[in-house]
Length: 114
Image (tube, rainbow, N blue to C red; front, side, top):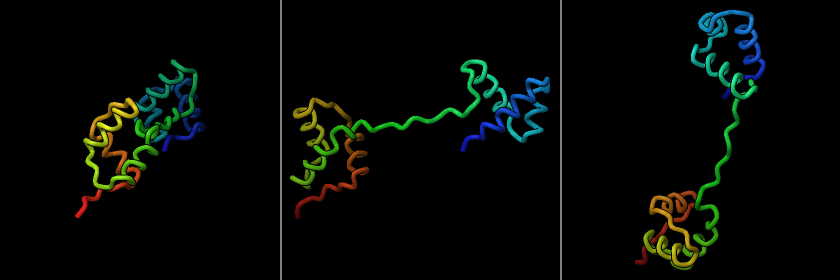
């Protein structure tokens, strides 16, 4: 969890008042490298708030409905077959690990017929 903006502002104010990086770090119980990083962030971007992390959509999300339909139609399909059909039908070239990750995230198991 990032440090609050108020704490960041206090630390930067202490640095601006002439206190050294080490003294500020000890006073606020943070690392010296972190103090240097927030000073650098303010210098380069003008912002003191914590950087927000972006949410990333998995590559397989675009064709998850297709994958669910394929596995429902043929539960014993191999990952390599799914990979080949995806390339043929949708023009998407992905590795086997991406296929495996998608199946796992969608809670889809490929059961072999008995």
